[in-house]
Figure 1 (tube, rainbow, N blue to C red):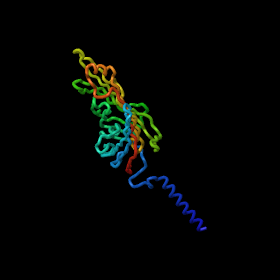
Figure 2 (cartoon, rainbow, N blue to C red):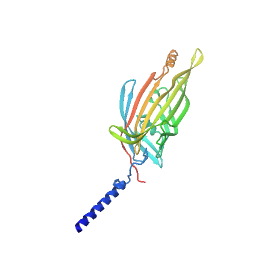
Figure 3 (spheres, rainbow, N blue to C red):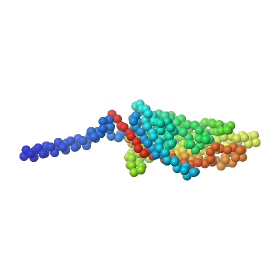
Figure 4 (tube, helix red, strand yellow):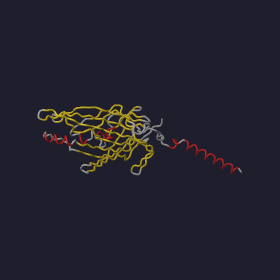
Length: 286
């Protein structure tokens, strides 16, 4: 009877310890680590993300595969800064955007004070960065197709003595919420997506027989559209960016008659896929 009672006591203690372990997962984690929380972009000093970047030029059918490295360089409470490739320009436009300034995150939003570079395909004609202030990149609580942020401006630049008037609008729009997203056989849960779209137009004025004639070089069009995916507890896991432009046929003929040659082809199109390869995220115990 004593042996039976002792066995029952040991079994009871073992069951109690098993239940205690199940209810306190932190006991099984390394010091300084906890379960993934609701933060969609962790930002501790040791965090980094590596991305495979595939650039497909639809005009030349050329494909270039590179890699971007993104990492935290500073953080303070809810704000942080990222850098890419040890100061070398990022190959992916969204990687470049995230490393362009100061980010502020919460459990629901990511906000940027930074700048967006223009697609490389048109920078031989116009070249400037779009300054962004308090620009919302995602909001996990926003409904689909809600505009999260918008930046509109008109600037002028000179091209061989001709004034170019450039009007642009950059918008950020909430998209779907995915319970799971599979990339290269890896499944990411609780993924929020958003769209970044840059609409741009270019106009100038040329003299024909002494009369100034307005000329639309680039009619209003989306020259960059990027769908970006952020996974809870990880950050950006994928960004699919499409760049394209089409010079107005009227502009091409008019400029040719005026013996003006543009430094870019009459059209261009490219796809840039930025997909996470590996990462390290350290979550500090509160």
